[in-house]
Length: 339
Image (cartoon, rainbow, N blue to C red; front, side, top):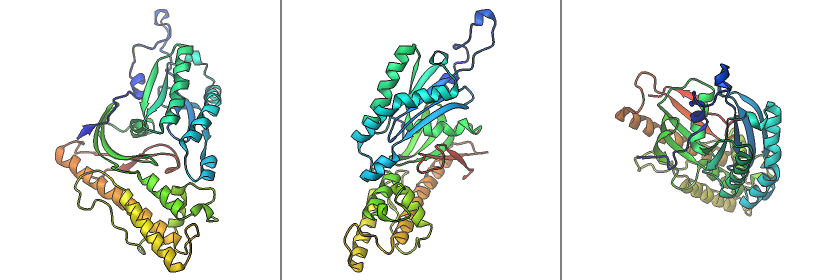
């Protein structure tokens, strides 16, 4: 087992510095509320928010690139980079104005530095470096997946350690969160993430042409159509059935789905790019197999934690997290005690 490759400190690290950031202590005043500006440009959304030391969001702003990338059939890194460059200054300024916080009142700036699209991350990092130099503020680099894992603690009193399953468009992993910057990585995606695989299936099915899916991302389209589909019609094999670890693989499943699509296109006598009559069933079967793979690997991680005493025996906790397009809000939520 290995640790996360980067040991960067999240927002909470700053909030733990209880004796360093004060308002004129020599005058006997109460401590200032520590305010942090967060900046996120890891993929296709430009986001900024100002938070206080309790985790309350005082003001936020978001520019979504969703409509642009829908028209091109997927995220083009150079396009995403340019859109970040065009909007980041406005987004940050809006977050500050909505929070009624002047940059001079900030205690630090926290920005996503990895993992993600390199070109997109570069825009956020470049802007942040200029901002902290201009206003003489500390800079906190944020590991994208560590941040997802810790978000639940902004909403609920979840104690360390806990097991976390992170699922997003670009990543999937299982880890034990042992502290703010202490994570034991149990398993990760060996090829592509579940969101990426489902997006590719949606493109292969040409769901952008479906009347119900023209404004949805690939994963959202699969989820919508799956609601009315028969998940048992196409019994796709769950990946890595004979591999006894906690890692994930979705490329092979995507190939299974593609082969089924080709077969059904031949049976129906249609060309690629034309909607199949069974798209709902394919969507339901693919989504069910992805969920089954995630559940089985999570169960293995639970057994591993139990066997090695990695979680408290009295109230073990499993959290799940992901990106906004996979969830209504970009937060983790408690799944309950599964041991």
